[in-house]
Image 1: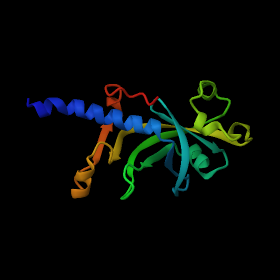
Image 2: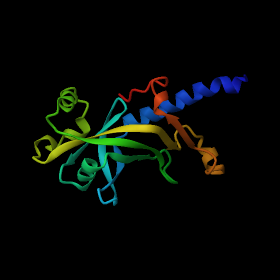
Image 3: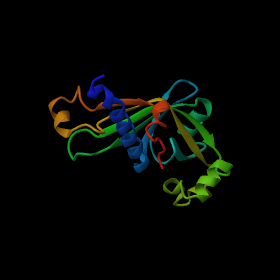
Image 4: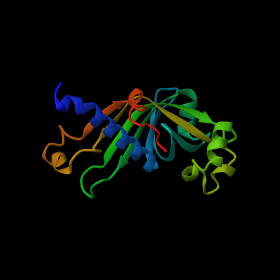
Length: 178
């Protein structure tokens, strides 16, 4: 085994940790859902990350909540900038989404611990139709940009910057988002 091969798992762990830290630091993403009739819908939302789960505040009558209620499959994209020019970097993954009542014990515990601070302000908890969408990634987490050298992205954007890791590797990478 070469030194490069021996260091490959360490590099993958470092990249996974970098991506998980980015997810934890950011608070905006798009969630893509599909209706019972098979119609796609994408919406920009604010989230809080707890461990490897994203929490989103929503209204039960919103399209995204209605879609999640009938079809738990969702797609998440977290865009963010590292450079003032060019396209944003992204982290994206497929997920399982479920509606959670505001008075659910798991949600209440997170609220009391202050872990849902970004999504519970401005009267969100007093809205009569409010709920949370709990989003749990499934499979791989993919990214474009994080960990790449800017010069490599400029020289060869098609062959640099993309990466993936399996969620089963998250524990090995220290995969707690908070």
